Length: 205
Image (cartoon, rainbow, N blue to C red; front, side):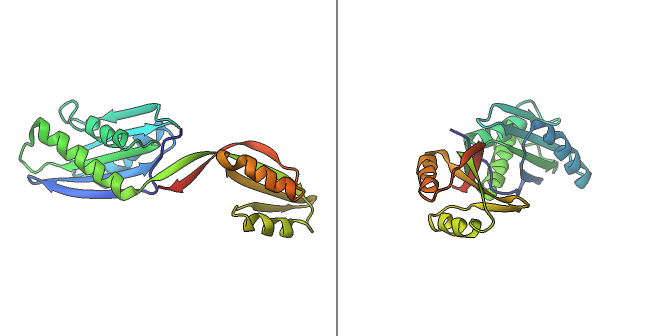
């Protein structure tokens, strides 16, 4: 089963013992995107003390990375990573910017602060479930395409039609659980469809 991801970018802010924390959640496709996000965040907040980060990517959350950015080992990157993993999310990066307020929070305080603000940003980002799907495609005549599109939409699907010089290309991305049902509908309409490969559908949780 594919792991869910966030629905949108989001942020959260908190002040704890005069230290200010701002967390931002980002949708990413690769761990290579994390370093540029950190760099851009540093440029946006040049007066901050730390920019700590963590990310998880892959269809099943196979890869991860975290960085304490000068905070005591395990007190920043790890709790941020735990906030992502605890929600079962993937393809997500969370950055937390800290302005030190002169009061030391201690190891436990830092863990709670970084993990808590990361969780707040993730909650604000919402959640998309990801479902294994297949793209079905068929070739149609220009004249037949509108009629078939209407019938397929009436059955609850969202096809796309591309009109080309030699005809129209119909495409439907359908959940694998509904593939047999959809193929039967197309056959009933007289449409010969073929698989164009695996896809992923994202739906609000």
